[in-house]
Length: 342
Image 1: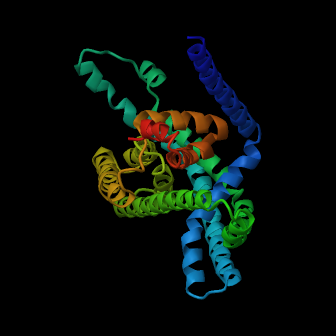
Image 2: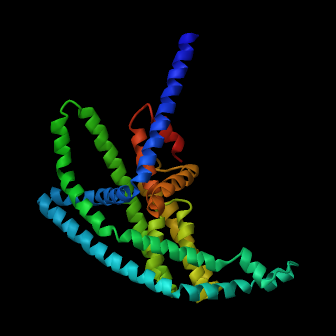
Image 3: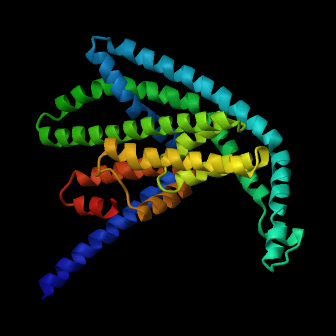
C-alpha cells in the first residue's frame, strides 16, 4: 500500500513539476515578447520557404543562388506589402470618422422597427447600448496594430535569410554530430515534414481565400477590397472564429457605402468562400489528423494572444498545431495529442 501511495505521489509530483516549468517558460516568453515574436514569424516564413528552396537545390541550382532568389523575392514582396498596407491603413484611418457617423445613421433607422415591436427606445439610449461606430473604431485600431507589426518585416526577412542558410547544412551537421541517434533524427525529420505540410497547405489556402475575397469585394465595389482580402487571409489561420472576425469590418463598411442589400451579398460571399475553403478544400488536402477541437482553438487564442498580442492570435493555431504534432511523435504523449484534436 505504501509503495502504491509513493508511486502516486511521485507521479503527481512530476505533473506538478512539469506544470510549474511550463508556467515559468510561458512567463519568460511573455517577458521576451519583443524578441520572440519576430523570431517566431521568421521561423514561420522560413518553413514556408523550405519547399521551394529544396525544389531549386534538387534541380541543380546552387544553394547560395537558391537562397539569393528566395531572399530577393521576399524583400520585394515585403517592400510592396509594407507600402500597400501602410497607405491603405492611413487612408482608412482618415475616413474612419465619416464611416462611423454614417454607420450610426444607418443604425438609428432601426428605431421605428423597435417602436412597432412595442419597445420605445430613444436615440441616445440606443447608441449608448449599441454603437456600431465603435466596431469600426476597433477595426481601425486592429489595422494600426497590423501596420506596426509589418514595420518589423525587414528585420524578420534578415532572420529568415540566416535560417535558410543554416537549413541547407543542418541535416548534415546533425547526422555527423549524432551518428548513433539515427532513430531520433528520423523522428525529427518526420516532425519537420508534418509541420511543413501543415503550414504550406494552410498558407496556400489562406492566400486563395484572400484572393477570392478581394475579387468579390472589388466586383461589388467595396472600398479597400485588397486590404480586407489581406485581413481574410491572415484570419484564415484562426479556425471557427477567424472568418467571422475578418468579415465584420467589410460588412459594416458595405452597409455604409452600398446599403443593406449589397452588404448581404458581401456577407454571403464570405460565407461561400469560407465554406469552400474550410469544409471542402482544406480537409481534402490537409487530411483528418491535422485539426484541433473548438475548445483548444479558443484557449489557444486566449493564451497566445495574451502572451504576444495580435501576432500571438495570428500564430496561435500554427503554434498549437506544432505542439500537437510534437506530442504525436512519442507514444507516452500521443494521448494528449488525441485529446486536443478534433
